[in-house]
Image (cartoon, rainbow, N blue to C red; front, side, top):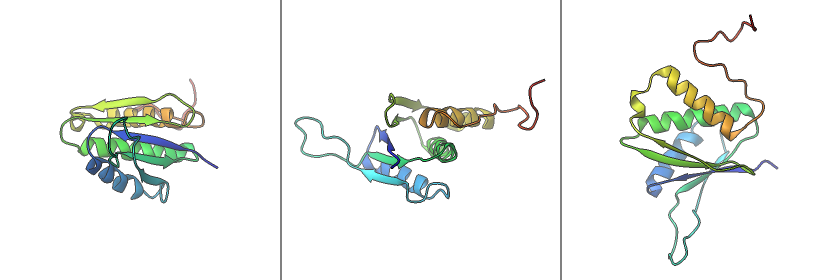
Length: 137
């Protein structure tokens, strides 16, 4: 059974709910995204729904996940911090500011890097500006 990666958002549960809507609305990720309560810090009475569980079974799903995450971040006002914890791998944190100003090729690079971190292995990433059909010279 595939395991889920965990997305933790700095902020409030509205951010998690909004990102959940973006991810679950993607045609590559139907039924693969769940809202989940975050760990309750010691001494706290409860937890906000500030994390999501995303189940990926292929590099294609990882690419879809990363593309939607970058698009969501780009639409945010101000800064946003997302921690991504893939199963059995180290957590990585993405803090973004002024993402709306990035060029399309920089956004593609960011999405490719996120996809590779979320699903290392079978993702073939072609850097922007390089021909995908030609082989080595």
